[in-house]
Length: 139
Image (tube, rainbow, N blue to C red; front, side, top):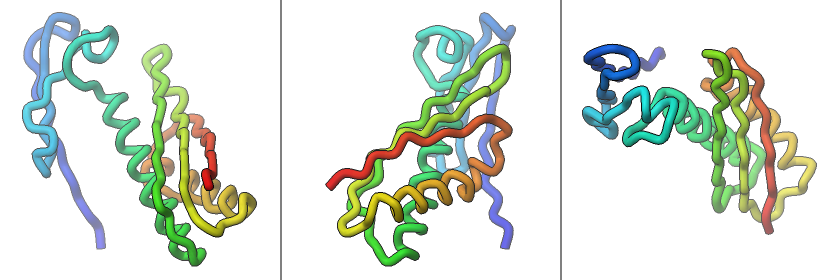
């Protein structure tokens, strides 16, 4: 079964002086501001790269949780930060930084499940860029 989600962007004005809003289907983002300054400088609002980072961190964490469950373990906490690099008008890197709390799992099994999640999560599959993971297993 195919799942469809949507978001809407509204932009007014020029690329540099204009402004826009983003609204998601769930309304978690509801006319959320974005602009040249929020994307390329330090302005108020969000930007597409930040949203891709959030999507990749969330997707990877959820896929890893499913992998951990299937292996017979339970993740107490998975905290993933994603750093998206935009260089020369192209996303060149998505770097995931994971801190995981999982009882009873070996480092080898953990590394195996992390590597699988990196490759299998739908956002990883959709990105045409280098993807890396720095994973820490905490007791």
